[in-house]
Image 1 (tube, rainbow, N blue to C red):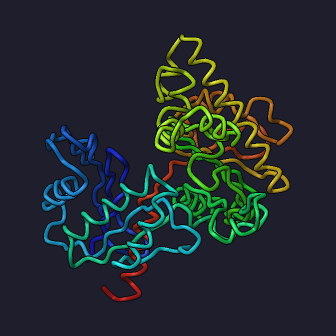
Image 2: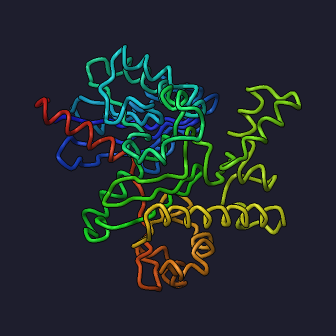
Amino acid sequence: MSIVLTLNAGSSSLKFGVYRAAAEPELIARGQVDSIGPQAVLDIEGRKERIGEADHAGAVQAILSALEPVLDGGAVTAVGHRVVHGGAEFSAPLRLDDGSIAALQALVPLAPLHQPHNLAAVHAARAAFPDAVQFACFDTAFHHGHPFVNDTFALPRRFYEAGVRRYGFHGLSYDYITSVLARDFPDLHKGRVVIAHLGNGASMCAVHAGRSLGSTMGFSALDGLPMGTRCGQLDPGVLLYLMGQGMGVDEITNLLYRESGLKGLSGISHDMRTLLESRDPRAAEALDYYVFRTRRELGAMAAVLGGIDAMVFTGGIGENAAPIRARILEDTEFLGLSVDPRRNARNARNIAQGPKPVLVIPTDEERVIARAASRWLTRHQL
């Protein structure tokens, strides 16, 4: 029995899934290691265990030990990794070796909040599973093939050729959502759909017939919508001003990636649940801004598509925050979009009140990774 292990690494967490390799991989178990550092906690299917001090390598070892009874003698033959940035070169899942890992290491400046942790998990998995095939699946890959006007900035052409361009992110999530549309809503899949991936990181994607035509994220995972701790769209003149005031690269990086967004605006928290429950006027103002910017980008994505046939909400906020969904789609009947309050309150699959579907679909990035690894194993009969 061939087993695929998927790893989705963040700065302080490591999500994992275990699958039997098949045309449609069969989930065996999933979980995560939280609070990587001095007090790491392993969670498998809701069963939590403190594992003490652990880095990413220690987290992988803890996962391996915990999974031995689950594997029941089956061997992990492939490990698939979510890697945020594939640059201009990598547009499909990639088998990892020393050369390709070095190429991904060179992309760390393009995704400093994510890429180092993704690669830390790769190194840990190679050590833990030396005989397994290692794969990278890229958040940027779904957006390859954008029209030039969506990829470029109005800078001298040499910068575009050097890789300064709009890449787009959350591609594994968009890949999964479009696969669900193709399976369950084939007519919608052929049409014009705006997908809103709203979580601690957030973006929107304009999709036509399963293909990305535009995204709110650009060169980095900072652009577009405001997020938990990231700023979203920002006039570059602000950065010039801050540098003129003496702020250095590291200080500005920390500001934009870790101290801005909902956390910075509210001064309270990056957590949408906390802000929705708060009576502090700063929380209300942060939510007002979040909704305003999301509505603005929805209009932009609809314009990219030349109209809209459906909208999909996904991600932690998109799947669970009914008040935010309702506010985003308030007075959007001109797009044919509206929300049924009762369906919305119970997180129904279709929360629309009007003629065009508004779907709530949980995303599954790990399954996309498992599918890619399973296809490779099938081709090579492993």
